[in-house]
Amino acid sequence: MKIHWCGTGLSAVPGLRRLLTGNYPVVVWNRTVAKAEAEVGDLTQDIRPFTLEAVTAALEPGDIAVSMLPADLHVPLAKACLEKGAHFVSSSYVAPEMAELDQAAKDKGLSFVNEVGLDPGIDHILADDLVARLKDSGLGEGAEISFTSYCGGFPKVANDFRYKFSWSPLGVLKALRSPSKSLKGGEELNVARPWDAITRYENPLPGGEVFEAYPNRNSLPFIDQYGFDPAWNVQDFVRGTLRLDGWSTAWADLFKEVETLEGPEGDARLREISEGLWNDHAYDEGEADRVVMFVRLTATKDGAPVFDQAWAMDASGKDDGSAMGKLVSITVAMAIEALVASRLATGVVTASNAADPMFAEDIRREWIAEVEGMADTLERIDYLG
Image 1 (cartoon, rainbow, N blue to C red):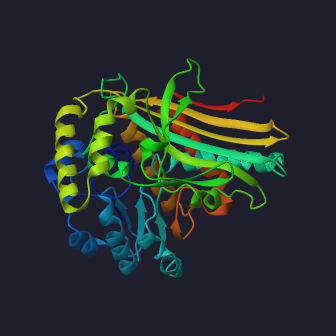
Image 2 (tube, rainbow, N blue to C red):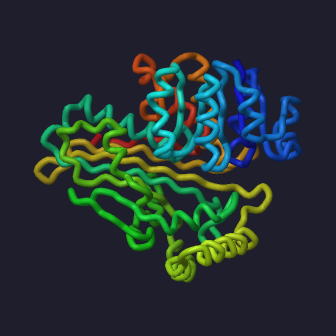
Image 3 (cartoon, one colour):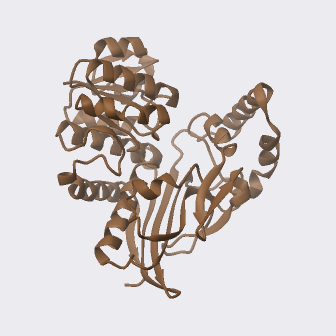
């Protein structure tokens, strides 16, 4: 068995180094070999130039392919794994084309593991923990349920732009053009642009720092993914993004222009904007980043909360790497370790359902302990305790 780790970008290296120092049999693939050598050449000499064809040819039954590549390469690599009888791991969201591989992967006894990074990934684990606690309490029956999950990354020392980029800004700009779906007051909330639904969010940790929050993507499928009891009366459910206070003001002119862009000309202009933002607002060498995440679950009866718990995380970059890089890739490495140990289910799975049921609680506890070690603060808050 070999682990084929594809991609050595900023959010990939800490997890890759964990596997290499753990003496796992890893083959490193990267489009630019010299860049990979600069990152992990002190730990391995088995670094090869990445092409999909080269990785496919090298795959053998029982191997694991790890895609820390651009999103458009996840499904082609997963299909190659299906053809060669290999497992697949990625930190990214499950695309519809990936979901279609579920039964074929199960038929071959393969695990296609996705959403095991930061967001999605760690947020799933923390949500699962809160849902399990509410179920165990029995307080969800007959209550109105509210769930929020927010995550954001930004510079540890705020700049005037209230944000910095660690890789191409194009992905962030495209996300600004994406609609979102969430649940508010028992009704589906559809938002065409993030800036149309920005709200204030107060940090539950000491200090009372205020962030700006907005819904992200389609939150609704995660009601089932997180194992909410179908009998629960879910009134509010949103997964979203956090930004530093003042972000919407600093980006106001950018919002106005992005809103007008359409078609090929709009895409070309978006690329131009991306290049300008990269020149003006990229992280400096060695500059510390910061990641915050807040996941909260509340059950209310007769207007009063009967269950109200949250997980709050605050992490910053250190000499051993950026907060974002560690939180995205260390959890990917842990998923691979669990896969090697035969602790994961087959088919297309995510952090919420990847574990074989007999190991689910142990894996959740291990992940939370690992995140606690990486973060400056990881705290479960019981507002009623």
